[in-house]
Image 1 (tube, rainbow, N blue to C red):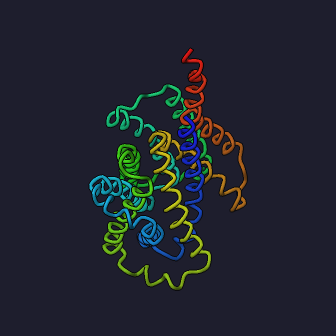
Image 2: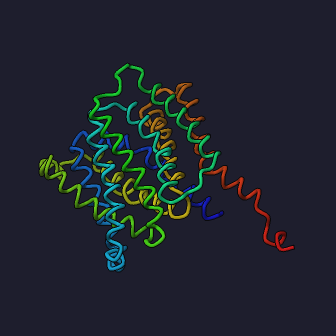
Image 3: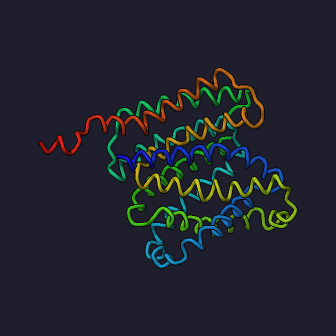
Length: 307
């Protein structure tokens, strides 16, 4: 129970880190194309992770099929999102990804025979309502949802992300969180390099030596905190909690992303942003914290149960 609670807080922290992804991505996108940024992110991850895990590479090779499956769904989400977001709007991406916990709930039940908790279903719909309030409040200009192709790409990205969370739970029983993180980074580095070469070539890489200080800070944040730290926290949390709890952190990320506009960009804190945040955080509580506390209340201490 304590391990599950710690895992939940690790996942919440990963959601907080992810909440600043949009802000730093906007900074680096001013100077580098998106697929080049993704390839550099994978490269930074490998520079940090390989010295920590090179002794365990034989073990990773033994489970290469599981690692490849995890990595392909993870990098697939990133690539599909980067391409799809160019043809859609923020409101579309917010609403589409807000449905990730529902997909995870279904997939986890089908693949891992996970039990469905009514409290978590309540939490999903509370958080969904909060997301709708925030994204509509943030997009009042009537720009719509974007093209059909872009929406389809984001739907595929969401499916890829949800599947990655579910299969990570199964494979984490045999592979450590650090091992899964390293394996996925290797897989992501190869695939992102191929995709970058096909669509952008080396035009972005030649600009790297001339990046501004703010762009370097953003790139290091994306590579180290968003890449290594957040991904490790997700893997560590999934191993001890559940894919559904991990998926629910999309609501923490959405809320922090909205607040970052207030903290960093000086935007106004609106009533609807505040209201949406209450619904989202309430939903996360119902999905992740309340089931743990409820279980603890109904579990007798060992010395009483033995009497």
